[in-house]
Length: 295
Image (cartoon, rainbow, N blue to C red):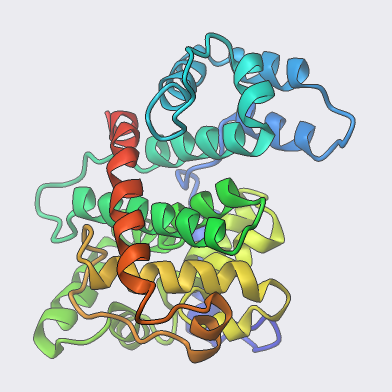
């Protein structure tokens, strides 16, 4: 996805529909407030903790996750402020955003839908876990941002299933009939529009940072995210590996081809790949706590 390319009339129409759908989910007020607070480098853990704690349901979900094996902290964390002090702003923000994403797109859906949302969330959590592992391998500090970006990379598919249901059913039928990638079927059915563009548009509506928007919009073509190539490459390769070891399902059964430049950046070789895959599988098991957020 490149911002310089003009949208076709069909793409513009779909974008306009997305922007005008009144029921298109917005981030909860408390999370918008937290995001705003975190832009201030002088903000305190107590200020952010108080903002999150104003939403008791959200605060409870966050505390469940931070006390789970996902973070592996040895003693119990009892308050959001304590969680921020121990784990950092980014970890708590990632957990809060994850909870909001899950609640915005509930697992409950029309039974006639061909899209398996449980398998989809398993895949998304798998990509998040794999992204976290790869970010650690590169010794990046932003491991929680990598997890969140991995979790949200396919968000556009949820928008398609929920708000463009008939067209998305056509997409899924085409994937079965042709045995093709879902992105190719989307472009055929929706005149060049895919879940990548739609997810990026939703990211802008949610006022996500530019890095996250670029990852969502370019995770199939990381070279297009020139200013955010590293993080987009991590999510791109994490997606490939998650498909390869069949964690969940994002709507198709093929294994995407890895971008050579992204693969080179991560320095993955045949001798270390089994170890990486084992780490990913272990990390995926820790993400089971997030399924509590689906209820």
